[in-house]
Length: 132
Image 1 (cartoon, rainbow, N blue to C red):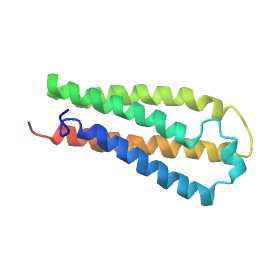
Image 2 (tube, helix red, strand yellow):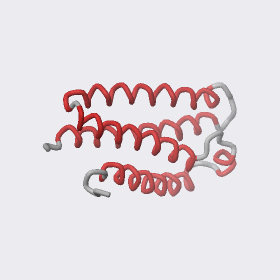
Image 3 (cartoon, rainbow, N blue to C red):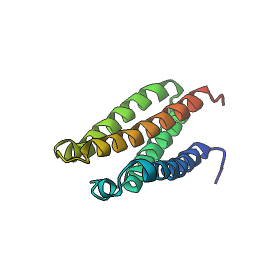
Image 4 (cartoon, rainbow, N blue to C red):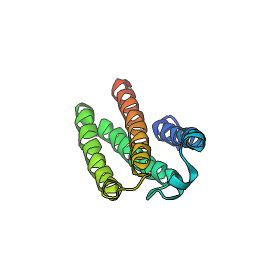
């Protein structure tokens, strides 16, 4: 396997692991344990889902670059929009319940979503700037 070719996928994996460790560490001090235990989606599950989404998007963008260099930006926009729609579907159960922990769970969800969106954006910029 050519490591350099798939280094962006490795970056997503490492960023997900580092982000999860930092998130759980901060959550330990900020989020009450009884709130975190009642979350619909646990933090590790959110990281796993969004890591998989990000890896698929980055992989597709690398393949699009090989075929049509000028379409990478459009592919990024299309797949990010699709990911946002899926994220909304995942967020709906959280939106529709009104418990004391709901604002904390929404914030937790959006922190993970924005973290992976930033990773995808940075890697897309790297893909576009990489001259081959």
